[in-house]
Length: 265
Ligand code: ADP
Image (cartoon, rainbow, N blue to C red; front, side):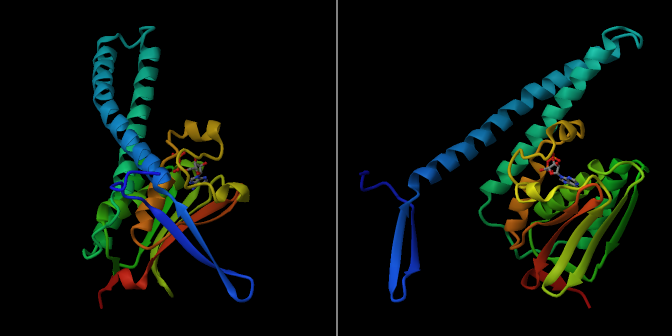
């Protein structure tokens, strides 16, 4: 029983039942929906509140490090503290990014994202991350661009590229492509990295899911990157596709469907 004024969320399904009958299933999802939105608000607020103290800590640590003599015994613990605070800072940034993407139920799909300028920015980022230790190649069909939210699409692409670099040993090869395929245009990142065993693939986009925690935390990630990618792609009528072979490498891709593409002749 609930007050009449309270809005309720009902899920109603009609399913075939035997040859000539239908089964109607009604589920009250109000409580689940309320809890889910409380969880989202809580995460968004906590991440926001953590930003300021972390920036202050980071600032003081920098000052202390610069004041210490280079050979002082304090240098090592101080720089470890600095590394860990900057890791926390990037996790908080990712949590905020995920909250923002989850909260935006609709995305303005009228704007066209300029893929050639986005690719130039992705190249700069990839070069900075790979520091010349990887063979990174880009191949972009500039005659086709997606409609959608530039920040969300860039964040999806850049998460896939940074993962490819982080989960590949130096000397490996990474190929980034944007090309026309039958059902639309495909963005793909192929690496020659550690690869992923089949039983993990369907869980990769869960928040905080990491295949090998010890290894993944060394790479400095937060376990939120692919959750962000999933939500960003969902807003663009697309989904993440993963093929991988353990020890050989992975291919992460998504297809922006034809109805969301703008073509230049
Ligand atoms: P993280 O911040 O841990 O990288 P993600 O959500 O981006 O979090 O990725 C989830 C997990 O998926 C990673 O911890 C890693 O185990 C696996 N993963 C993602 N990309 C790759 C890749 N290119 N090669 C191998 N494993 C990957």
